Picture 1: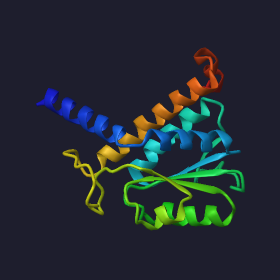
Picture 2: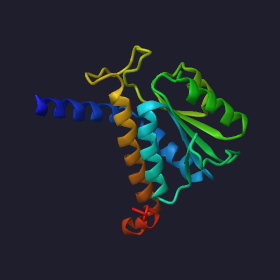
Picture 3: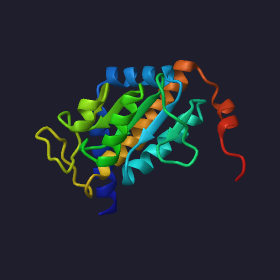
Picture 4: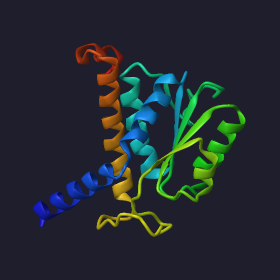
Length: 184
């Protein structure tokens, strides 16, 4: 049973990661590298995955923030908001994306529902055709609990994007430790 579930999870992750267009990933990397600051917003387990992504990008010297954290600065023109929501209808990311746009920031959505309010607000979307509560017709089905596949995608995709940034900027992996927390 355990081995079968390992295979199931890994196969589903490979399937959903492969469904994202590589040119979209390249464009996302450009947007991240060209932004003054990169903000992240999501809720629940999605937010937990995004916090890991933000921390990893911070390790690459990118100025990242989590919306709602006590040290969050003002967002402005030249900044990027990455809003993740499978359905694109989660209230908090949707409202924050609208506010960020009004303040002149660029918005990227990572999610499944192309017809969502969040997708229509965003300047650009990373389409992840995974199962959501919206049950879009072209979603890749998952046998995992609820939206686990989307949250796994975010974490793995964030590390893939980070690795691509390291390669693009030809960063020395050993030098990245200067950004790692040292009060541990």
